Each structure stands twice: as structure tokens, then as C-alpha cells.
Image (cartoon, rainbow, N blue to C red; front, side, top):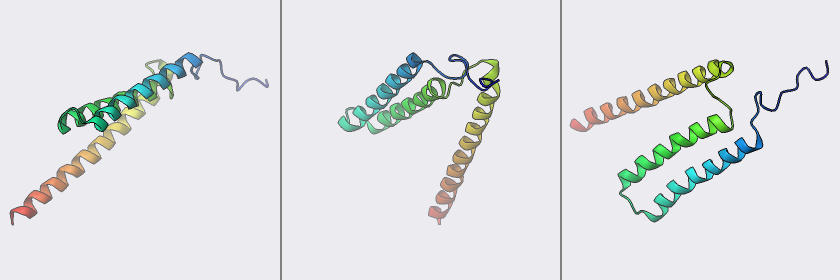
Length: 110
């Protein structure tokens, strides 16, 4: 009864190998955009697109390797809640920027 709250090693926590893979991927996904920005070898638009793409990939790496979100039935509710929260944030930020741009355009016309 004392161990009723104990977790199996593979149940909800990752292995050392999983954490090391996540850490190495995080370092790589940080170093590449950092190098692109520091050395400025690409255009600003290309650099921005690449940095944003690497940021999205890094969020996914963190979700999988550190927060252990996957497609299993046990994690389905967590993944659904995360996707819904991301959609709400995307809509709020996107629509706010659209409104501000529209207001700016109208105000500059007069």
C-alpha cells in the first residue's frame, strides 16, 4: 500500500536515453538558428522563416521528450487540451494583429 503512488519507469516518465535525445535535439535546434542570426549569411526573410520553423520543431521536441505527450490513449486528453489552447492563442494573436494592422491602415489614409 505504501507504493501505491509509485510510477513505473516507462509509465509516465522518460528514460535517461529519452532525456539525452531531447537535450541533444534542443541544443542542435538552438545552435542552428543562433548561427544563422549571428553570421547573417541568408536574407532577413529566409532567416526569420528558418528560425520560426526551428522554434516550432523545438516546441514539439520538448512536448515529446520532456513532457511525454504522445498519441497514446492515456495522453489523448492532454494533447487535445494543448492543441485547443494553441488554437485559441493563435486566433487571439492573429486576429489582434489583423485588427491593429487594419486600424493602422485606416488611420494612415486620413
